Image 1 (cartoon, rainbow, N blue to C red):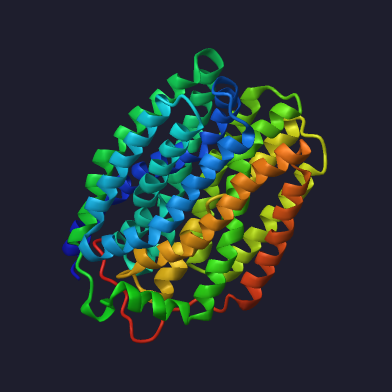
Image 2 (cartoon, rainbow, N blue to C red):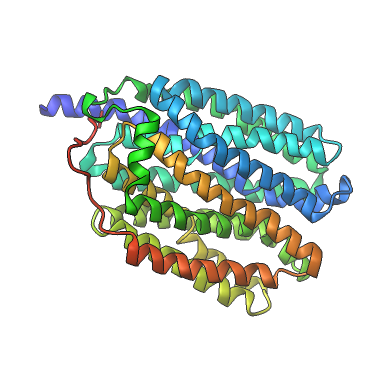
Length: 410
């Protein structure tokens, strides 16, 4: 490739990467801030905490079950139509939520959120990024785009809590309708990556690609430990604001903590992408799970004054979504990018099983015992096991034989 061709390719890749960052930032940012609605919605709509978290669990089930089929559709017919459909589903979800009068309308809204996030969240956004980036720079670029997924949380959390503190919760839901609508043009631009040719050597049916992946020990371990990732993250997203309210803290502290997690995660994702280009990704993933577990254990062992919560948020932010570039890069290393959306979808089925346990299970524990002690201890224990298994049995990172890296536009 000549210097002029390389420059042109990078210019073509830049709008795709920017749009993918915006789309994923909004999709993930809104989802991660849904826990802020728990106190006002449960009071206004006479829902229990387990009702609210049941809806969040449904969202995660739908997301997990839809991810692999939608990934296969995107691999077969293109990312753009799937991502645009997902953005429109997100708009519908937020409109339904704004009009909700009870738990079942909220469940319906979260069902649409699950479809929307499956089409616009990390799996398809990272697939687009991996295809748009050259193999030599892929891990770093995945880290950069992954970092932008936190910008949404960092900006949305304090804005939403400010609205909830002054006006009815429906104003916050209305804000989410506007933000979801902005995802539609971002999805259309990200879809330009469909023009990037994929080598025929990598072409395989979704069933064949999944079958090959499930025979790979490293991929199976990756999926199994992804369960714990989903459990820990959704537990914090959904229950941290309520936990702080129970401890008598200012409601704004929960939003501040989520915002700090999002802000610091920018650094965490950049570091994950950089380190993933140089060190074994399975070891980095295992250390992430162990680190999260240590931070969770220390935080929940003591009363949470504001200073401790800020430190907790900063520490957790360093390990928050850094798994996204590592998991995405690892799958690309092992199997290439042609069926990447499908395979990431498979791993997300397991991830979302953990999310269901973290969201709904956490709510059930709270309703039964009036505290989260059993829930956080369970999350810490599983995190330690997952970290050790990922390091010991995750195997060395590498590209499988017989597969050439997909060509890229930048």
